[in-house]
Length: 230
Length: 117
Image 1 (cartoon, each protein chain N blue to C red):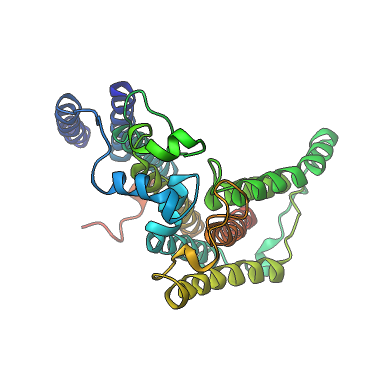
Image 2: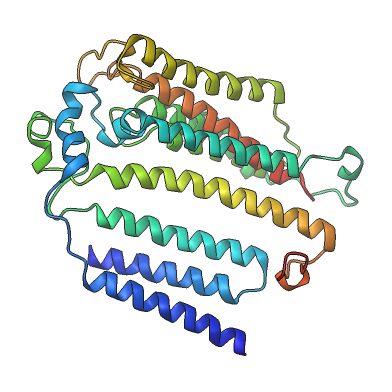
């Protein structure tokens, strides 16, 4: 009982803080400081339609590299902790196979879901979307496969190679930015191209394709590791 | 946008309450996920400006005077980061729970006293 009242007290303290924040909050009326600079200079400087993508990939590209590393570390942690012991894998009862509808539907839909994910990360600089979103869509296609065919296994060597090569290429493109353009992860190593076309905005689509592949394979790996435990 | 901000705060409070009172570890992870969602809503709401459009400069007007026509893109970029990190952290926490359950066959947090002070 005393524990519960202490919890209630803590939450009530948060209510007071949040209430103060909510009542004294003034909505923004104008872009200021760094946001204003980003929006006004971005079309000439980087040539990407989607300003959020330009910020994520180029202006704050180092943050995104850190984010990808965190995701990689978490995926590695999941893989290490759930390392499969081959002896323990045998479970007593055999599972009922999934229904005909689910099997046909999954077989029909999976290629299109993967294609949609690729579309999202290739068009990240032109429309809402990008590498992380596209990678998540691809991972959701893998989840559909796992739900439908519980015994499904990935080709691990292919997945690991895709993941490592895209991660390394991301860093290589960043270093090319130091050598050929203004700094680490500068997107002007490639010509900016015509504003609004798919081959524009310099290295942004290239980087987002690498991020999309890396995030997709990593999330699929996490899903597979979590699935294997019984 | 005050409504969205308020909903975000309420979700964070629900998350904190669940984190403090639940004993089941999976429910605690769910509470953290709910609090995260609230935080993301708050960040998006803070960057919103009334009557403006998304920061996607796909027309000449937006390209020339985007500063007067779009909402703040920086919180949106930060929320993108926060969502991805949130997914990774949740997956890692669930993995820890799986390992703990294999050790003691219990999901109750009070059965694990090794780290209690």
